[in-house]
Each structure stands twice: as C-alpha cells, then as structure tokens.
Image 1 (cartoon, rainbow, N blue to C red):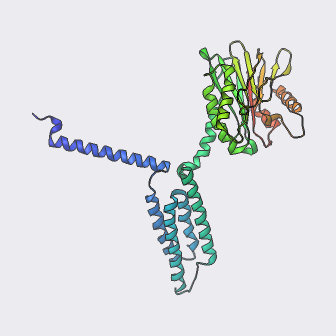
Image 2: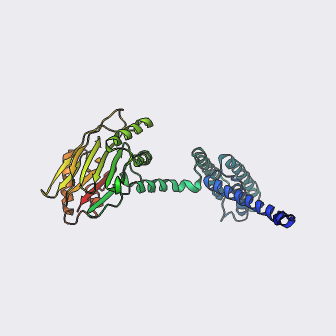
Image 3: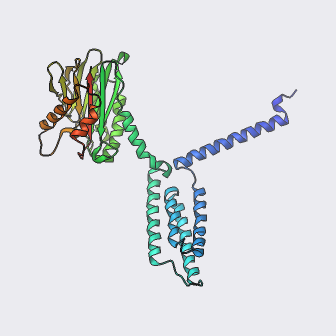
Length: 383
C-alpha cells in the first residue's frame, strides 16, 4: 500500500514546502547581499530613473517652486546607493531632462529659460562628486548602509578591547584614554586580562603606536587584537618578544610602538614590569608616603629582531598605587620629562584620601586637557 507521503496531495505539499523554502533562502541571501553591498542595485536605479522625469515635469509646471537644480537630488542619492556603471545611466537621464527643460520652457508662453550655464555647472559638479563617492565605495567594498557606521564600530571595538577586567576585593583599577585633538580614535590602547589558575594574575599592556588619528587607530585595532590573543598564552618573558616579532612581520612604513607590560599577582601584590621603549611607571609607597619611578629596560617594538626585554620587579602593599601612562600625558615641548612626571605625581596626591576613585579621568583633564597628542593612564591601587 502506498504511504501517506506518496499520495498526490502529500506530494504537492512537499513540492510546495520545498519551493517556499527555496524562495525564503533566495530572499534572505538577496537581502544580506544587498545590505553588504553585494546585491543588485536595479531597484534603486529604477526608482531614481523614475524620479528624474517627475522632477522635470514639476519644473515645467512650477518652475518657481521646483527649479532645474532639483535634479541634483537623485544624483546625490545615486552616489550613495548605485554602482558607478549604474550611475552613468542616471547621468544620461538627467542630461536628457535638462535638455528637455531648456527646449520646452524656452518656447513656452512665458519664454523662460531656467536652465542657465550656472545650473549646468551645479548639476555637473554634483554629478562628478557623486561619481567619486560611488567609485570609492566600489573600490573599498563598503556600501553606504554600513559605511556610515564602520568608523563608529571601529571606535567601539577599540574601547571594548581596552576595558579592564574586574579585580578581587581590595583592588581598584582605572583606565582613561583621550585621543589627540578631540578625535574619537587613538594610537594609545590598553589590553588586559586575568590569567593563571583562578584568574589570580592580572596581565595588562599599555601601548603607544607611532602616529596619530586614523592611521594610528587602524594599527591600534590590529595590534590590540593581536596583543589580546597573546595575553595568557605565553610566559611573561616571551610576551614582548612575540609582540616585537608580530610588528616586524607587518613591515609598516611607520611601524614602531612603545609598550609597557604589567604582570601582577593579585594574591601577593608582587609584580613584574617589562618595557619596550616606554616611559617608566610611578608607584606610591603608602608606608613612606613617597612616589618612586619603576623603570624597566627594553628597545622599541618593531625596530629589530631578537630584542630582549628584562623586567623590573616590585610589590604593591596596602595603600600602594601604580600608574602607567603614555608620553602625551607628561611630555611637553621645551619642558623636561621629569617636570611632567612630577606634576603628575603631585596632582595624584590629591586623590589619596579617596582611594583614587575617578582619578584617571580627572588627572588627564587637569594635566593634559588640550594637548594635541594621544593620552592614556592606567592606574592600579591596592586598598
């Protein structure tokens, strides 16, 4: 006896189900491709082509309210959504509309000639600008629907990677980062993670990438991801040599960086501090009430292969504070570096009674608010 699925009605239902599944899959893929900029642009092209005669008709009917220059509107939209080849078709339709407007209004009852040489220049300039935008999008593969959010996404990724992990009771950590010139992107970054058995070790890396602005920020994003992957994967002594090798393999024209690498035992307070051409840190000895510099030796990252980095060892007791920072916070032209560090430690003493809560942001605000350089400050305090 034939099974239930082999009946004519069951067979039709099966075919219908498969057809619907294929249609849903095709629609989903088309939507994803269009969102990513890989789909067909025929739909927006048709809409924009239809808008051209509508605008031309409005110009013929109400030239005072709809001047010929309104034809730049579909050109602007086309520059954002169309490929360069499709955009050329839109340009042809726009040119035909301008010619038609000139001919019809010139022989109209009022004898108006609204399409002046200035109008042609304006439309032509907008058309050229739209074509340049479309070619740029086509070259980098960034659709307008995502291009406007890519820089925001880049900034948020850098901030997320710079977030410090929570520390156990008795410890306080803060990090503040301020890009140069009030921008949203910085060549300074921090990556940190709790590693070891039970997360008893804090590993943190503060890095200052050469350059400023978007160039430095793009390298910062790449390096922060690589450095974050290395944390906890290598013994502390091998971290900076591995980071140095990674920079050398990039072969960037401006590819060096300074970095300071902290390995802190959260149970005992003992730490190791490695430096790759970075400024020394400063530590507050709560027992003596004095600041002292914690300086390790090591060359810049990305300069030569086989570089070695020797740590300096220290201990954070109750009430002690360790501050690591980049040069933008303490260096000024015409002023000695020691003066900048002294200003930092002097200003930091104001926050001893409060346990340094909120100190990182306020220290940058008070010492280097308007400095045209990237500034970063990492602060670790043991209560």
